[in-house]
Image (cartoon, rainbow, N blue to C red; front, side, top):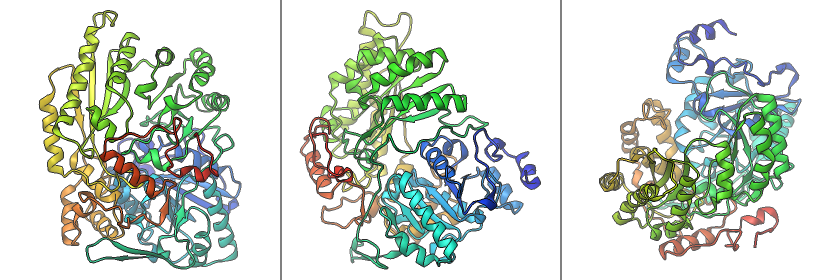
Length: 611
């Protein structure tokens, strides 16, 4: 290890974040590869190392003999200060080489509040922030992930975006880059060719005009770029690359376990949920394949917990088969199985019995809204009776702890809906004490976690205004005053954080300057309470003449050109408008397995549909 880095590690918290050398990390001879790829996660190590997408693409790229992919994370504030003080640039963990040595610098965009970290990491690497200032082919900055569905707020900093799922498109980008490097193309020539790859969006090839009222007047492609860029998907998850091993950290991470992705997409259509729409259409993995991957990963990593992950794991149609295959060997080898994302309306006693064998902690469910009226508005498609039946099943199965997720600020929400959250939690408490066969001598614990609704692109609520911060604070106070039992604990999100997320989620290119100025004044790690500086963000927006309410708190007409109008994530605008109108009428839409709602996402599979 570099002696300068080694000295710094003696002065920081959790030095294991910065050393590399973990089990299953891939080390290659850099002189024997054609393309070096820095995979950058714009947050700290413990969060980035918990991300399944990074594990998949790291393994995928390193399976190529001509490419070496290394991991890069945002150093925490103590390490960053020492790096800047001692002239140590941002480096990759496998080789400890500076990020500026790499051909491709790739960022994953998991949440909007990581945008300033991208700038901070580029600056710490000594790489120019703006795409126009990086004139050479080297240090090509690319980005992908869920927040790439509206890439505009960071369009000035990124050379190209990879839209949708990365397993196939990443190979195509690297292949083209390798050819460009070997043949000595200019960066411009490479970008013009890359823009022809399905799913690649080159922001510098699109001109944006604005109307007098500040809304977008037009989006015009140049340099032969397509009018609309459609996301990429993997059609068959069974033939998709999946790693046989994961890098095993020296220190504890947020999700310190094996993650098996059982399916992609969701059949439910909850109108607030961006992931439920941008990951459509639903595709499932074969249960026997998943079981084999679980065995292999346990052997190669030594992990003693497996999480069956998806947007709604209890909707996986082969879950009973999968659990039947996995339980014998996981019980034998003392490997814990966890099932996140369980649905209230299909949590059967049989499933509970199987879950109870492997999961000893409390159960988590998400009613999302406190009244039936509002659950119908958001298309949650669960009833009060189903909520109570599910909790009864859990309590009779020996559970004494339930966590319930709700949202404040949903479209059409009233104070009566807010009170409904407290009343639902109280009914769960009362139910527990009414059961003759509840666990004896134990009290119940109901945790209520309340987030603030943020309207997101490619959802039926992309047109809706976000509640103002004042309104959200009033609703939080009203909810707190409505609680009647000490058995209920309440937690909520910082409304300033949700407000900034709302601004960035539906922003346009005029926010690039805001993000850069906020970063220059010390904003990064914005999703961390101890680092968040809302006063700086507000001051910057005021100085630059940007009205945050224009992005967050304004209702948008169906005719308005949205900043992401030239991006296609599968669901049609006509469908989103239909769903928005149904929400305001209080009408629900059946899930995809009951009836096709015509969202248009199945065109990505050539028209196959559950209906």
